[in-house]
Length: 247
Image 1: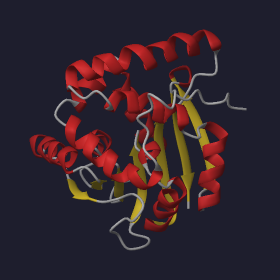
Image 2: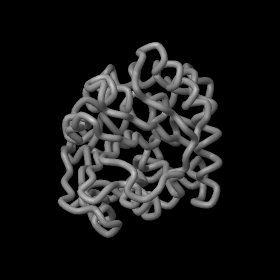
Image 3: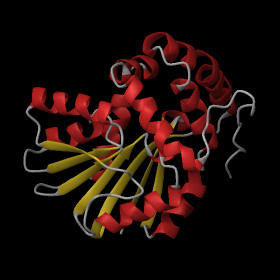
């Protein structure tokens, strides 16, 4: 059973209500798009690269498949997929145009077969059954209406389609959990603020992770949305988790 999430004080919380979250997330990621990649490598000491590779290993994309990288950001996860097989077609969707611009530039530099477009996870601009597989890295907790976002993921996947979802989680081991949460709550936001010059983005990161319904709770939400054979794989002592399922 998951330990209760440790939420921030209401006086200092930057978490918006659900009806304001879409606009908040869009503005926030537009604002930090220029430093996002640098901070990812810095704050995770490069571990985020390993986590993404494991996520793609879990997805196991096959040649000729059309894959959606949802909440693609600057395209790291989608570009990892595209770089493995030139016959895999990847579409990256995100609500932040600032992040999409960065991703598009990276794809041009790598000559990757990946396209980018603006799209809200709760109302995806794709016909039902469009994609063979789907990835989302560190983006599912940013969806304002989680159950609606999961249902949309099921809708755009073909029957038998696969999803691999990478998200932060909280270590269960007390010897890992205590120093990790101290770093995550006190050190990481200050480094993020200094580099990105955004005083709220990395406080939001901590608070959104603490509030996310992780572990078996999230697996249950995936099943309720229509996913089958749902599994979860903790990474790095539970700092992150890969959730996988099929339609």
